[in-house]
Image (cartoon, rainbow, N blue to C red; front, side, top):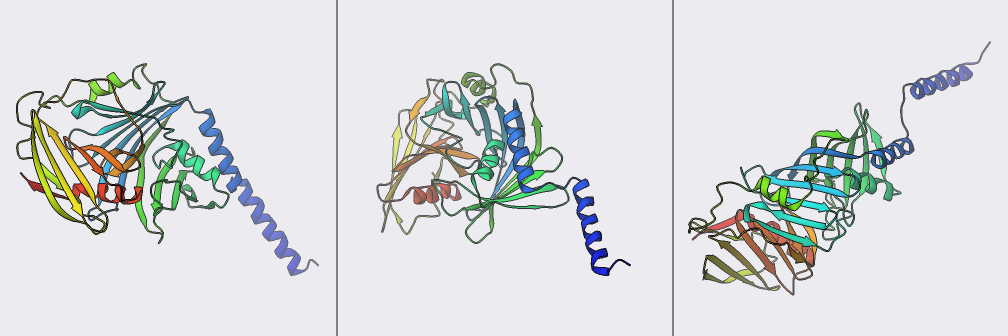
Length: 341
């Protein structure tokens, strides 16, 4: 007669065999498959919604990601509040660029983007963060493989972890939650669609094609319509400083507002809006990093300044006293308040 303990061992062993037969994957299996997917794919297209809770108001914006092997990227960002405008991060054989078609402006970066920082909307970046984190945690639910990993944000240490969800059937990303130091989801990236190995046209990653195809037709090219009713933007987060001076300068074809903030740490914010959109010219070289400022906008962050375009205006925030993280904190809050002129 077989003892009960032996029967129990046989039963447990049978359950293990059944689970193995059902295809349950280990963490090592999933990481290996993700690596193979990234290595083998010729490209992808993804439609993404990003939600950010970094300020007073929740921000929603849309991202269309195109990637073509070997190292071509097109990332188009737009705010859900705006019917036009937006920006494009472009990487091709000539380098890394940020395009603002509405203003016919382009910047060229001496940058290793996207490899120099976590990018929650890029498949390769998510897989790389997993493989680089020896302490990554792994769980599953009914439909997804879920990893919790460290992030790599060089200019923001307040977002140290992320939860990454991959579809069990095709190993493509479904959802990313970027967490603060308390474990709260500050950024959520939802992949509405993900197409593997799509077909691209030869000019899909060229500057001229992207500037021409996304420039709004009704942007003024002459006259004085653009600066009428100019909204002068000031930051909500000032790191303890207060607005001490604001000077308005009339330009030949627009207006410049110089706002000075003084306190424990001083800084200056310059906002400029032109009546005439200049014709497309060669990209301006920038020494800095591409940073996400929220509200569908990316900027150029250098050691003592950050520059970006938003809603038809150019912004330049400078300080030799603010840290890089503080510069970002102030810049990300600039859209929160305005004064009509």
